[in-house]
Image (cartoon, rainbow, N blue to C red; front, side):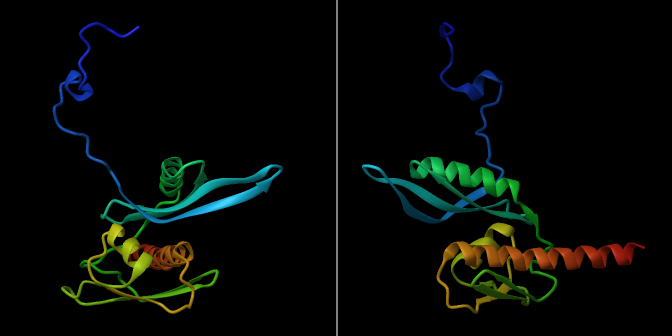
Length: 174
């Protein structure tokens, strides 16, 4: 039974009139319709690829399937939050050059001078923007156009940078 005189605006009941800010920015990279064949026909569902990031060094990629696109996006966003990585950003760029391969996708990332901007295309650009990298040069060197594998390759390259940077910081501190 609903409470009488309940306010429709839930935020004002708690004493705050400010809208709640989202922690992460979400970008849907890809939506695909997939089908499985069962007795009596085909059953369709949707697979979505989502990239989330806080533009302060944390970024993640998630993939999920659902009965409709909204459900698939929600599940993929939860999956991306589970697989966040921390990207080291030094003067608005990455500290090292990196090369990574994920399945059929190959990505090269290089640091550039301040003011150059993000020189990258497709999913690699999206991953770098949501990570908060302001200046970077990246190239997808494979022939694959699969957005999922290209995004995963970008994440793999940023992960190798993070591991190398963390090792260097530990050596300097000891």
